[in-house]
Length: 281
Image (cartoon, rainbow, N blue to C red; front, side, top):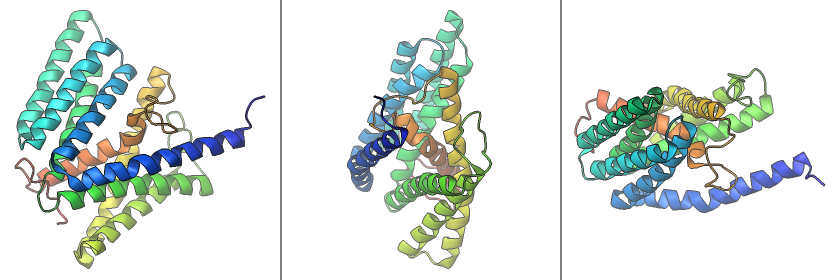
């Protein structure tokens, strides 16, 4: 006899919660420590991401996953060694190699243009932001809190209110109400972060306002990965995390937000590798 839908959903939710209870504290502890342990965590995650991403794209999956993983791990290590510019060069070299191989084999070039920036730039960004000696920890915890708040608020707001879908062809469950809820969650985390860091009312307002576009960026990252999965004809990017699918399914929003935060830092003048000081600090 088939398991009733309500029981299946309850079981899936229980698995998701159990996975989060086990994995989240470990990730947070390593993020707190920072340094090479944090770089090792991101490097390990980038290998899994490379494998999953390569299988969502057309072409030589095994070859692409190996090259992607090598570039990502090298980029993480170089960034941790305060050589973020060299890390970007390594990523560009990997992209050029992939393009050359794809051109030779007659495989779609767009897949390489998507894969390398999608993976290499975010892992460089998050290690670079964490490497700031005084504020890196605060920035990373703010980013993680923002992403988790967006997903949580969007999920429960969307389920409670429902209403029009944002892009049902790509993600049939995401609603405009959920997006607004995600914005509220991001703004709440921003204001709370400013309070905990004793930054004052002005910083609280800035952080809360920054949460609004970051919620849109996070959801855009989610839609982007959904588009890749739709094209590949799969529900999840992998099966690494019980109840959650693959690692890309869990970090699709984080990679977008981390990249946006690093870009904001650069625009504000944080040009030296490891500076990672965002505008509100």
